[in-house]
Image 1 (spheres, rainbow, N blue to C red):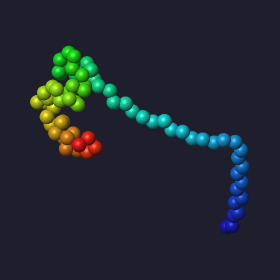
Image 2 (cartoon, one colour):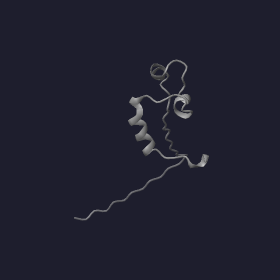
Image 3 (cartoon, one colour):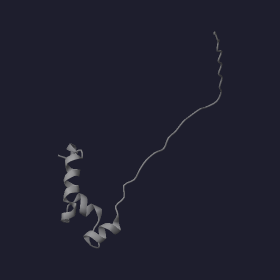
Image 4 (cartoon, rainbow, N blue to C red):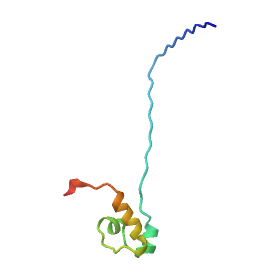
Length: 75
């Protein structure tokens, strides 16, 4: 069996493709308030370490500290 295939394609104009993807990370202010008390911000808890971590968070924090990349540029 023999077959020949002839293909032709022509186009005019402008063709473009775009993909917009993303995600956001937002604090759970209500959860933080229930656990740490009113007026505590995510910055107080995470960045400034102004609040003592609860015992229930120790395993999670140890795992995150072990596996998270370090920012060496601030040294």
